[in-house]
Image (tube, rainbow, N blue to C red; front, side, top):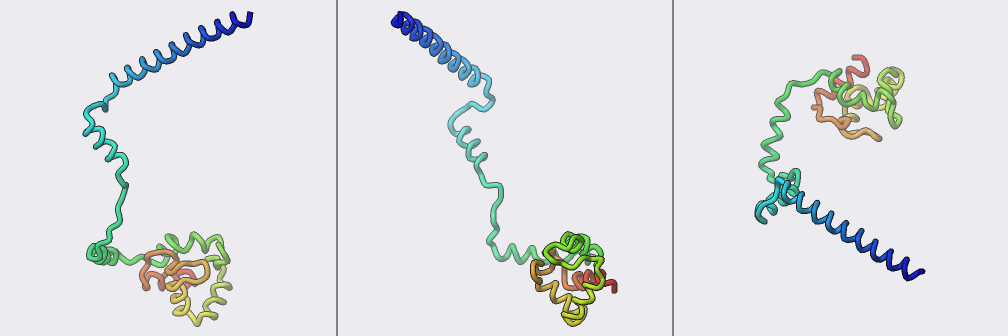
Amino acid sequence: MSTSNDGNFVKTFGIVLGLLVFFMFTVMTIANIISPEHGDVDSQLARITRNIAPVGSVNTDPNAVQAAAPAAESREPRTGEQVVNAACAACHLAGVAGAPKLDDAADWQARLTAVGGIDGLVQSVINGKGGMPPRGGSDASDEEIRSAVAFIIGE
């Protein structure tokens, strides 16, 4: 009785395997017929090269970097409030990493006294302090930073 079951299993397994192979070749044939991107090897190679090309590149030409620098300086200067909203508020509204909060006048006065007035505070912002990166992580000019500091301390 077990040889009969083994024979039936082998027969059924062979039929199922044959059907799966037939189905696979049928699907592959249909896919090749309806595929819009079948062609010669050169067009396939060009498509693959285009798909794996880098998204960007690094410009290492020093002349190009110097030529781009003056364009950034030609913009209109921002007001202190604009600089504060764009760069400072992200940390100083919530007091991130011990940063003095914008609305804490006493803390700002203590810092003004500690660094020697508004000039010292401006230099502190330009150079960076503690967790704050230089210029507060912005591209603000010295004048824009001075006006932002003046805005924060209420001058």
